[in-house]
Length: 254
Image (cartoon, rainbow, N blue to C red; front, side, top):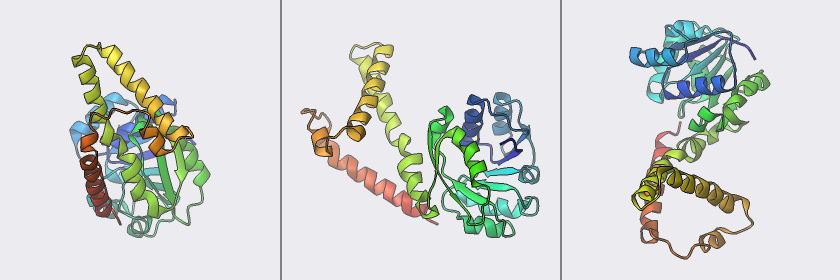
């Protein structure tokens, strides 16, 4: 697939996607980016010199248009670009909450609309990215080929996208700071930085395999280690997860 690409929004997810494309040597014929923050666009241009910084109407004229904005500002932006989007453009929103139907309606009933919930691990081409298409989307295979550069990209019902946002897209943030703290503790109690990093990364990898790839039940997995240093706080931690994540899920529902 060698189409021109426009990004409306030049923040984190646009950088992740551009990095994933660069990792795979994917060079679209043209890449343009729109963002109101000049510092953001300058930094993006420095890292990816081949991109062009343009206004929203120009980004909207491309063959593939990524809407890389937060939900509160999407509808306003769609109103600004609705007359610039070509009828055969592939429009892909990267946000939760705003449905395909709403996007299509705001873009003069545009027929080729998709929604993707991207994962940060796409930056190393290892994303787990669900995508949904409008019923009138006729070029799924073409767009899926491009999106597969980000990692595992799969089609799902639109009604499940917000659940994937909570349980997949945001999931690393629930654990990364804990892993980092374990690295620091390892160094504090006698390991070198390299030894601590290897111990944590190797053990996490094998722990995930043990839970998800063995024939053991959850109770059997838990029983493998008799000492649980933070076990007294388990109920509290579970309550924090349930309360915060389920509340957030309700907030991002369409």
